[in-house]
Length: 255
Image (cartoon, rainbow, N blue to C red):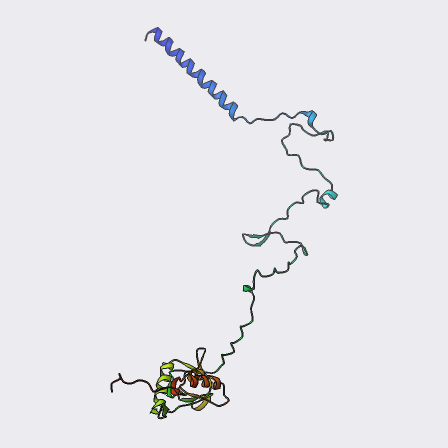
């Protein structure tokens, strides 16, 4: 190899060594921790004589027992209590340290148990009779029990009425109208629930509708004298409703 080439190679190797050495020194300077220099003039005058200024130990807070008792110093936390293997509970609280607060008032009446609403005046308790059948206007049969509607005078099927000198079979017509009103709906009558047969006179209703009042007000039964529906009966007769009116027009009907 030529001497010039050897000299050039030696120069390059020397430059590489110099660059690596300079980089290492810079990295060492960055990684080295910085240590603040303590000025002895800033230290308190009551330090003990054997206190090492260069020591890195933490300085513990000083205080008297009375300071800790008065709350000047935070007491050391109590350790957790082991309750089972591998399980720990918080430190036990001091007796009398907890007080029970009175329950807060409810936000609204929705959370209170309100008394039941009173029953309506036109409602009453009784037995429910299913699939009632009108045997006459003012009388029903259901579940082996025959019930005559209280406050009305039932009109039998064979009864006849006269209007404008013309006689007609008002009993059958009234029973047909009564059956159309019932339509097989359940009837509630004020008879004892344990009564399962025989005859009874009772006030009955369908939903909130009084059966006796409907019969008398529409003229399909007469009201008992001095009974509940006497006024309704007089009005139906004055208006010529039901049995108090003319016979139905059957001119368009076929036999």
